[in-house]
Amino acid sequence: MLAILLQINQAIDTTTNAVASIPALPKPAIEPMTLMDIIVKGGLLMIPIAILSIIAIYVFIERFVSIRRHINTDVGFMNNIRDFVRNGKIDSALTLCKNTQKPIARMIEKGILRIGKPIKEIEESIEIAGKFEVYNLEKNIQILAIIAGIAPMFGFLGTIIGVIKIFYDISLTSDVSIGSISAGLYTKMVSSASGLIVGIVAYIGYHWINTILNKAVHRLEWNAMNFIELLNEPAE
Image (tube, rainbow, N blue to C red):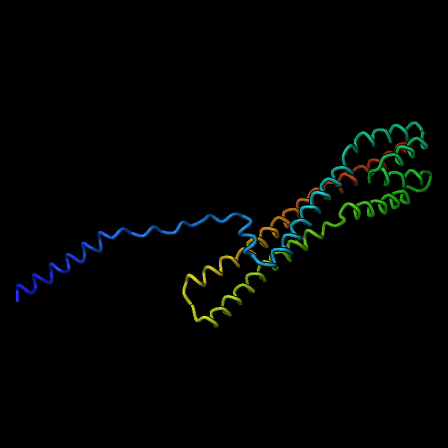
């Protein structure tokens, strides 16, 4: 009996050594995914998300440049208007307003055209002109707010469609392994991540432009008030 056990142990040791001597198969190399590969795996809904991102960037840059261009160099303009009005050169002040393509120039022009009328009427004309100018400055800003809201929805929709497809494939193949599920799911999460990124960028851009716009409106109001005070100077 002991001899039989010894023979079995020797056979096991021989088999173990033979298995250990077999070289391990090399693991397949994992190729790194490029950004374009990830975007492609996001599905067709990546197209509207990409379009929304382009629109958001364009609106932000266009509004940022436009507001800064229309608001800058107000100090020199107001100094010239003050000198013309004090010296009684109303025609020169009107000419300067017409040649200056800025919101404050169009507002002051409305006030100059009503010089000689009650101050209250001049204030109302400047205020009405200012409302139109502010409306023009904030044009298209709401597009950023809309994109900030709908871009994440497109992303979630892409993920939901991807999950539905995964479970449909499972119902056909009965393959519920973690590998098959995760491989399909992580690619569908790309659309959610992309939608959130676009939404966050649009949200930041919207509030940034609003901050710049609020400063611009305050500057317009300040210059308009200075002009009204200038008209009151002779009466003091």
